[in-house]
Image 1 (cartoon, helix red, strand yellow):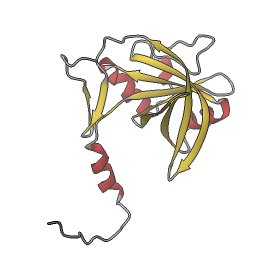
Image 2 (cartoon, helix red, strand yellow; image 1 turned 120 degrees about the vertical axis):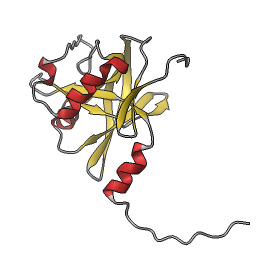
Image 3 (cartoon, one colour; image 1 turned 135 degrees about the horizontal axis):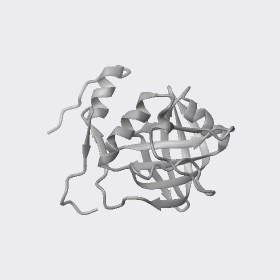
Image 4 (cartoon, helix red, strand yellow; image 1 turned 45 degrees about the vertical axis):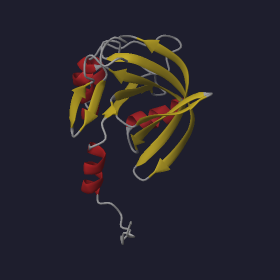
Amino acid sequence: MTRPVEATVESAQADDFRSLMSGFPTGVVVVTTFDLEGRPRGMTCSSLCSVALDPPTLLVCMRQGSATLRALEQRGSFAVNLLHGGGRPVAELFASGSPDRFDRVLWQAGLAAAGPHLPDAARTVADCEVTGTKAVGDHTVVFGEVLEVTTHQAAAAPLMYGLRRYSTWPQGIPD
């Protein structure tokens, strides 16, 4: 027999919410784009989710006020670099906000690239067109239709983040 649980609905405190979400391991990506002057912009992100298969759509959640989000909204396109286990230094660099981050990593962008690709750190890159945004609290949810997928190092294990630390997908588990 179950008993009803009496609960008071309260806003989650920031520390409690961080603790909750740290127990949910996720992949690590670097979202990249170009500003209107053609300068590369990028930031580390662990909020990536598939939305639909037809058309292929994903979403990323980005902190409001970031230069990367501003450039992405102005340009209308972005790339999602899915990092492999060796990409941890790149994840940390792009999370640091260092203004010279693109001077410190190998990046490339072909004519069809929606944002810089990080071939040394990424397993795969998705070039996306912005199809919508939604402000939620201190972040913005960005919806992107995937226009092209480029594989760089598919055999490398994915970089994960959870329990406030980076890890790599265990070896021996099939992709």
